[in-house]
Length: 79
Figure 1: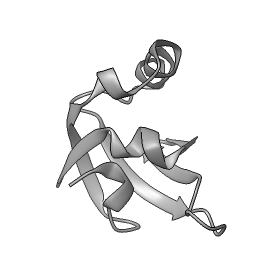
Figure 2 (figure 1 turned 45 degrees about the horizontal axis):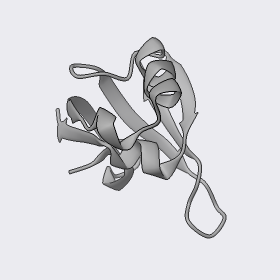
Figure 3 (figure 1 turned 180 degrees about the vertical axis):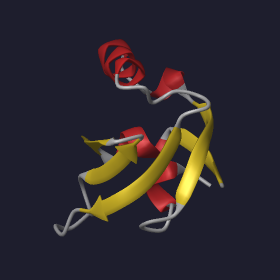
């Protein structure tokens, strides 16, 4: 399952990231935030407008906003 499909509140671990689908500067920013293989994440909130963008993702004690297409590039497994 990809991160954008994770149910709200469900904890998961990132098992793969399709870096090729992301622009290099976006990929670098996500890695700097700790969003890489092995990261423990949870989906905290989905946006209320149309495509449910942005998504609020908790990484450890930090919450970051991600675009749905960024979250779609990350495969997760539930914990």
